[in-house]
Image (tube, rainbow, N blue to C red; front, side, top):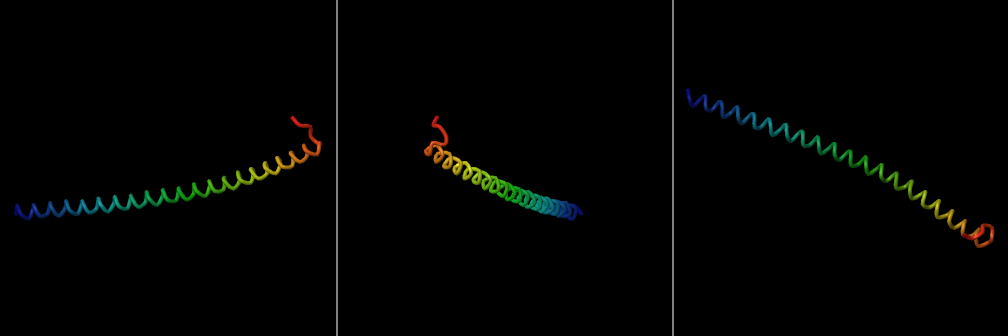
Length: 79
């Protein structure tokens, strides 16, 4: 009887251990998946912002070229 009771407790302990491990693995997978999704979203947002900033830089460079040409032609007095 004592041996059977001992075996039952050991079996319950192992089952609980296995359940805890399974739950932890599922939670870890969920956390990793969520982090990866957030990472992809952030990269997409940053790429969009980068494209916007690169476009603005191009506009400013063109403005500078136009301004310098106008300045050389005497249309704008030098500083």
